[in-house]
Length: 191
DNA sequence: AACTTCGGCAACCGCAAGGTG
DNA sequence: CCACCTTGCGGTTGCCGAAGT
Image 1 (cartoon, rainbow, N blue to C red):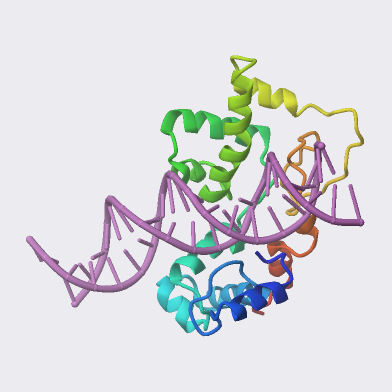
Image 2: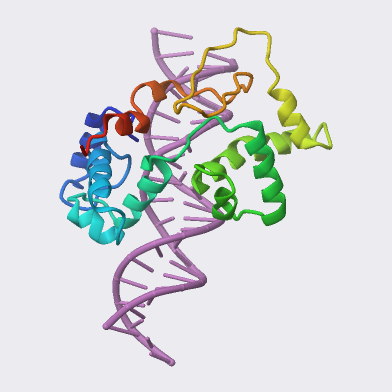
């Protein structure tokens, strides 16, 4: 994970003797930069070659996943809107766990994010709500009504994206303010 | 303050499908 | 047709911060 101070990751890598082998685990900021720069200059290609050519000690698979789920400029993270949530539930009811198919209907969303969202939010709340209500969707929406506490001020990481301040779990995690992919693209490191 | 438990998410793993020689 | 390689997908794991005790 990028948010992790890279020193910890590197220590882990060193202690496990992975320095000169294929690296696993959280991506460092340096690796992200290398990958972004390389793709910006050469485009996406055969991922194994890309990983080698870019000098990344990662598998092509890992590079692909990192790019698709996190680094792509059009990827949207967090702040799932009620509209998107309804869509996810609707499509899941229709298609089941076809996450990539569902993700294609939600521009900027990745299959991984939708899968995680479903499992951590909808599935759990749906299970809970089954004990008390016939309508899990309504249950979830009801839970999103503003509570008594103060409403934190949030801002969209990308201009133009809808913000729903009343969504209790739509807040950007604190570490998003550490550094973000948006920062990368605003820096345009490959220029 | 210290410890434990829980929730969210990034990343890995294994498998299947598709492409190529 | 077969073997090999790459990509894509879905399931699962492990880490970390937050919340609870």
